[in-house]
Image (cartoon, rainbow, N blue to C red; front, side):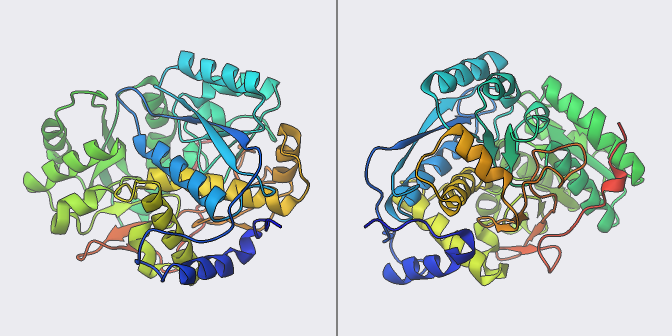
Length: 413
């Protein structure tokens, strides 16, 4: 008999058993567990894998999650999953084509791998009652899907702006100069969220909009430090661009606080120059493992070993973790819900009942549509911040890890 996946509350024990079976953390890449059998359950995923703002790490996390779910966790209801990935390129046209393909294949759900153009797929998938699920949304429009049409394990797009400005305020920072790739959605994000929230907290924010391809990040760095801001860095840029910008900032003599957003791969490349940089990922990340609760350390070990087994052991970024965690959460929620069939209707029903669920390397989530004002797709609104240490590890800025945010400083609609 094939064992079913344990509910998330029991995952810590399962993780410990798996790790002990393969010699403990850090030893080898082989994971033992229960192999799924039978006809695969095809799950859709839209990932930003093409174009100038591609994040290939999203695809790497999907590969690792397929391995982990199918070879270790025993699949969903004992059956393996097959993730049908449609590569987004940032254009709504591609997103629409992806959505139409998912509808024609009658997938039971679509994973949003933080694709910026996902909003264009919402009406199509919504009409077919196919739920969108992810760690976080790639666009405002995906966030604003009606209740039951989408579920995100962490806060909405507006969450990132509130959390970064909250972090600055808690650190006593009153000026910031930050970069984000040029796009209409970037300007809307800054104008509608970043600047109003910053103004409510008494923080002056200047923003640079480098092109997605061919940006001279030395010039961006010089622009950022011209007014000697309390904080420099990024709202969001691809991993390589983050590293190049932060390196340029340090090379040009900036010793103030750098905001890295969700970027993480700069840490290894920058060495000691990365110390003091602050990050705001949505989840506990591998470099923060030693500061994490025991059950989270076990989960991060499993993520690392699965990435190694999938051939991506050198790509332990936040983006790869986001997609990995989303798929593992999906598998555990559906198995805990019982039943044998995985349909769009059964997936939606299972997610509307999620309450007090301990997500993979993340916060406790409840998908009742009431976790963030005006955004029913959000299942948790807490934030977590980390600071790079001298040895290259990350330590949480707040000892407790996840913290509540003051929603009163959000701009009023």
